[in-house]
Length: 317
Image (cartoon, rainbow, N blue to C red; front, side, top):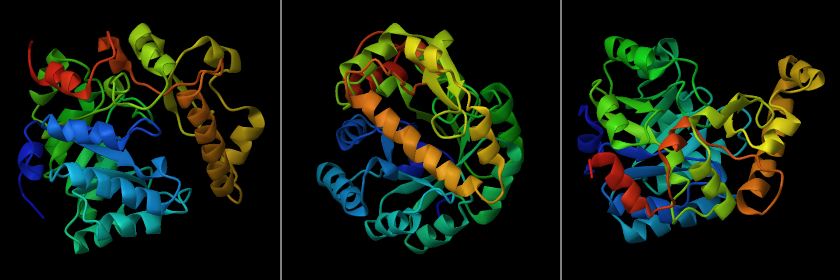
């Protein structure tokens, strides 16, 4: 495994940016255009209904670029396809795997056997130390300013604490939507940045125009946390529909979520139901507008090609 501490050097890319994996949102065309623009990117494996579809997506990207890209794996027990997804990632020799929501031990061991790097999502120092001890190649510091399943600690505290504690590269996730924020975060000494929400409003993104336009029309103050989608707090745009249905699980759902015997199955059911709901809202015209996004949509003023979004991050112009 490489000892290089800058993401650009580690992956051989021009700019130290990962286009963050976003459920339903990330697609092959976005990754291809990101690679052409000098960054890398990752797609959640769960964006594909089968491992065959995942394999086809990986091969399609490789046809257009020889630069490294990643796949995001959910590594807790709710992901019944984990072992199959991991096998495909290793057989296809992708550049890196991003692990989320569980222990990455199995993934790290297997990926390293195939010379695939593993970057682990963490939200605090305690977990960062654990994944470093397991052999992670880099830490993705998911802070309070992130979209999706955000952390609870601001980057202003989390990044300095991780830099003091950990010896492997730190990639900051959250709070970057423009060049000024890009410069400020890199100035803290991180190896790179994971940036997602601003790419929802890209021409290459396959979600509905309503979803993209919402990222233009709404801002940081309109982002709220909901537990109704996956059982874990997740950031969404506070549309009138979200206000109508609320953002917290009811008393029965909360009870089942804590039951030792049933919580595994209830979490899986909640996740499946929530993701199915998100899929409908993301691609169809509907009043049930539940759209995932983070506070960085504050910087989104129009729908643009991926290349232009990348340029706006790395250049003052």
